[in-house]
Amino acid sequence: MYLPLVVGVDGSESSLRAVDWAADEADLHEVPLLVLFGALWERYEGAALARELGGPSTEMNAEDILKAAARRARQRHPGLVITTEAVLDEAEHALVCAGRNASMIIVGSRGRSGLADRLLGSVSRTVAAMSDCPVVVVRGNHDNRALAGRQDRIVVGVGETSASVLRLAFTEARLRHVPLAAVRAWRCPAHETVDHPLLTGGPARLYEGCAAKELETALDDAPSDVAVRRHTVEGPARVVLPAASADAGLLVIGRRAHGRLGRVAHAVLHRSACPVVIVPERM
Image (cartoon, rainbow, N blue to C red):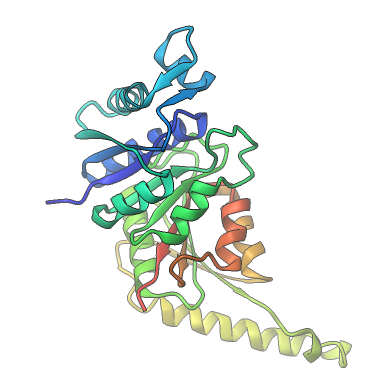
């Protein structure tokens, strides 16, 4: 039996966009969709869900939120198997627990606070750091479709990356029939060039060559049915990867420590122009 894909909802505009993306992804992978509401409160007030329900009232309960989200997903993909669940628990804990028996968790970048999408909500941040399965944080101004649309590639950050990160990136590129851009950031230590300004090109070429070699090694097992484009880019990964996301449909990166996001993952989740997948790396 295929593990379901889980999407967290709270009635906010961000979570409703996450439902759209999750429905597309579940249909693409041919897996069931579990729509999960987790909170220690019973009622919600917000204009986004009121518009979805088509009524003037802005006060709804968990059942209203789940019904509206499920109906939205079903309208998008009528044949999708959808279940709903309300859990009286903190949203972060409810989602992390559900992720233990899920293929993926999808969350919006912001919650009920309604702050700008460029900022990352506490639920999204915590779930991305704690989950045992991959987590997608739906960001950006795209149409949030999992299927290929205006975004014609997937980007994967290749550092000290485990096979699980690349495996997921290969799978997503294959299902969408789009190329995979494998990006390896590199930097030349300043002390190796400052003392010899006329020779700055030498050390830089050395470090770029090492990065290219490491990238090739990481891609040794790349499947033949996925077009892989290799990119070595000078600069810190926390800057290089968000820049690479500008014209991408999905950005895939790894997470080593359980319960904590590293500097790169933290920066990417705040700055990416497209949905980001955080993949827990198996040590």
